[in-house]
Length: 515
Image 1 (spheres, rainbow, N blue to C red):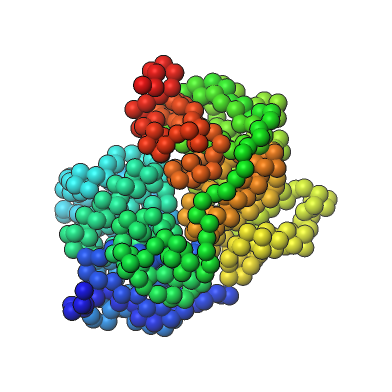
Image 2: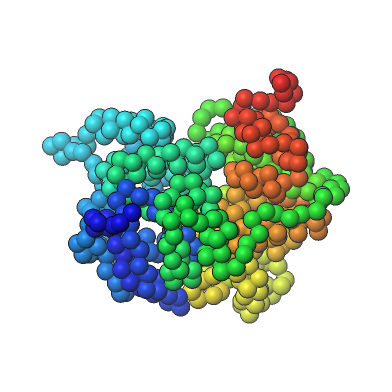
């Protein structure tokens, strides 16, 4: 197809540097009207930085931006909004104590004689959520809704502002497979209406399913743009990583031994609703196996993990680790008893964002003799340890161990947490969405590490919304639906379709026989 009309967005020769790192090095990106254009690259390749330049969060050191053929200056997000450019950020920009509705209209409020008029706004948001299948509770507080729901709120914020150019930064990292399918439909519908979409992702199957063209970045440089229809997943992963990537997990048969953790009749109250989010759940995880808890987001998995790891209290039931009752133990006591935890929300529970990378690497260990003497931190030992992990897990950052965690890309923040938790080599590792926001090369590495832990006789409890990951990595699958475990499946003997039926509540083992 010949390009006759001007591109809706052109970013020409964009360069952006930060201390110690050239995030964007002479990048050119052109977006056609009505197309879905994917931006692909490893963690830290410069994708989010480039989109932040387009949205006015950063100013480029060099290069120009054109909209509809005219050069524009985007000094801040208000300028971007005025140009009808909207962005859903990888880490959501929501105010937790506000309601969903207040978050959507914030900054674009209707007022009458100085008073906020929410009636028309509520009607418009309700119509948008109906039209695009983005069901949300407008009166719930953001802090009480799931991450998947927060994602929908961000999308509604863009649609509410009538944006024409929509930037999605890792939009599916936090969604369930069903929600991802829904989002893909929404994106195609938006493009069909003439909206132009820039879609940052690491997930090759999504790119193949939804995008028209793909531009690939590697280490801050532009590699090339290809038509999606004329490429393959293997070719794209090679462009992105610079080598062939193993897309399937290779692992030997498991040889589980004794139970490392036992959960018995666990009940956990819901913070949002007046009922139990977890209802009488019992299971165990043995040394030398990977047990996966699968389910659609919001079916009690988060509350279950919070109760096991000590972030929330269980209202009933027991959790034992290595034969020791830890139901009411502190988080540090659980850690000392042999539990490590890769949390679902890396910002809230995984990192102290304003600490350096090396400080974050020893968060649970700074008091051990290796890192302190008579209460004084051994800074040399901390630095050596951090450098070892950064090297081993390929954590990319501008200034190495002294980089402030907040300034790192989301994927590299995730790698830092995983490095810290895996390296501790404890008997039990609880991994919640461990590969969320990671590129194929990093996912391949993390999967190998989890399998190595299993083969070394550790117990791994995996909580994942990624069906491929569930099927590929686990030795046993426990499916949660509405707070209960409704099925225990063997990944070698089940299908994705059957797993989906359990996740949707259409099938369950036990009371209602699996017809």
